[in-house]
Image: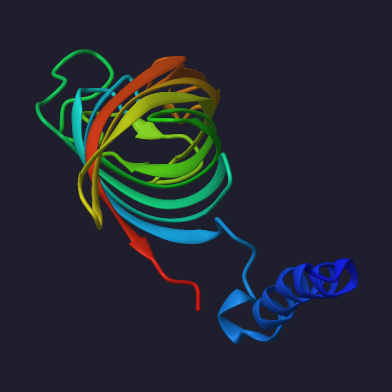
Length: 198
């Protein structure tokens, strides 16, 4: 017949010893579920600069549990020319973006903050007001989905909708007119790789 005290001691040791081993393991310094991600994406933007533009981005993310924080560098190139009254030459833009996201299985939703500058080649007597590379500031939301294609690779598709908080202006004499739309949309697809934080 088994001694009840010995059984209780064996059960207690089996629970305590693995916990102590985990606490002493240097690999357990990071909380479970915390890891980094590297992302490269291609994008198509509408309304961000005066004409439709094609963009690329690289991003670094810190992801934990069901949330993530993204830091992103973006570059855009106009796909055409605007020969109207405001612009006559191709434009491009560079921007930095940060976003805070929530994830639920394969779907994510983010708040995005974007700051950048556009390059303008004015036509005629038009000139940018205040700077040759006027600044823009937008805030908005991004929604999308992720698909895992291998152990270390994910495909990510997304749609962003932005509201322009600050828009660059073109000035003619004393009159100034906004160069870009008050709203913008960006669609994109990218590849994501996990990064070890240890």
